[in-house]
Length: 306
Image (cartoon, rainbow, N blue to C red; front, side, top):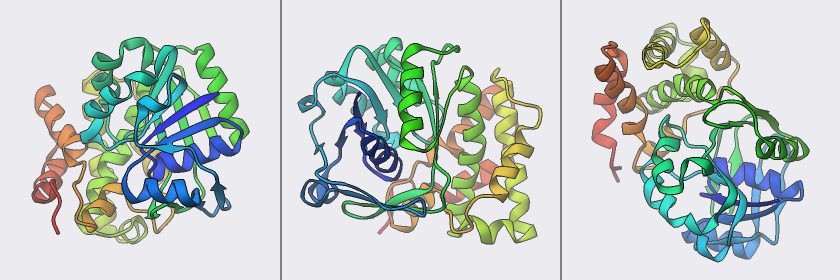
């Protein structure tokens, strides 16, 4: 199975390396010092699950050099969705499946006008990992889960084939027939945790152990769930309680990638996270006061700061 990983950061690097180790023909699309290190020394994943080294590592900065593939793991930052979507057109054959694994809720609908509805699936990645140094991805905790499925619902042959590969790779994987529900369940968690850990510059453990900051999680989760239901998404009745349960069991040192980006002075994905919650809330008439505050607090850092 031929796989292209677009964006070899924490998500793309970790899942791509696991699939390569399982025998898939994986090519990583990266740039800069990270690409140089991968070409020279391979890609190393430091994880409590065990160290993985993919060497030699197939890596390039030119998607057109790869040719058509079976699957694309689409892991770029949210502001790069359209430009990266245009760049990966040479990867798309008649049966290629593109699985967006971004943090937001609208990557698939942004890719469909570029790549066509048939090519785009829905995907959810659950992992805490970042680039520690060029050529090295470091994972926090052991949880590593991939959920994917056809946007119109139901299961497909290509989804079943990819599921078998994921199971061989040894991480938790689900071929879902309700991927929109899965996407929104992640969005409840991620949009909120990203804003809270970024605004406080503090990992999850210290926040949930403090009764004042811990209260923010339930409030923000409830706002996102209300927006999702108003948009017609079929969420479980206990969506907020399930999300709180996941949060209680998350690694104490975990911080959302947006928090890491903010601390490094990089651009942040706020407009597609809390910003999206606020915008949809206004459109649908759903109050989102806590996300509005978090969005306002973080907005000055949207484009990065030295």
